[in-house]
Length: 326
Image (cartoon, rainbow, N blue to C red; front, side):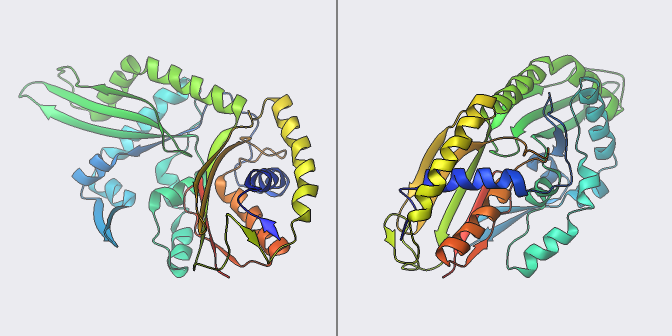
């Protein structure tokens, strides 16, 4: 038998540890000193370009973001993003290019469709590129006859938690220039010092205390398994064996400064379980770790120890979603 909820901390800590040694990713990297950044047009900008579709999904409004259409509709977008990337590159921030990663997500989105999932371009890109920060950009050039003024808003968002880290808005100043990319680069250079400092502070925090992720587990049908009770499908002895091992690993993480051991339980019912906790940014091999890696390892443990069939419906990089099928 297994007490899935009451022993949740041990389970998820186990998975986080296991994942350190079994994750393979495209972008292995040394310990970064500043967060990697991907600059994307905001939903507001996409909407003005006709590249945002509103969809009703069982009573909930969701949005289909067509970034490729945005690049086609706006001849300035590519130049604007390049100009911003230049500003941040000069400050030492690693960059992840939006347009280049768009080319690499088509297969992933096709697989999502085949598995009955509604593909999301942003989630697919994040899974491939795994930036630390996404920069949502909104801009508009306002003409006043002989002069122009470029207004813009730039929001820095943690790509794993989708929490806003910092933002800056500039109504623009009158100028004789009409080159949007040039105007934006000049204004960003002038107005984002505080934003850049906040980004560095945020990344220093997750480097020291670990990256925050969430795991959500649901049962496909009620009665398959109860997350807050004993289950007849598993032997619980392995929990205690692994639990002692995890304590040792958790101590290593704390002593090495990789995490602060934070753990928070969310929704807890017979058919739904949520937990938030922090994991190291990178595994021992230098590859970044995401919630999907933890989910993959956790599903293996559920199958091996409990004989449970599960389905991974994770789309983002900071929140894993697992469905227990039988």
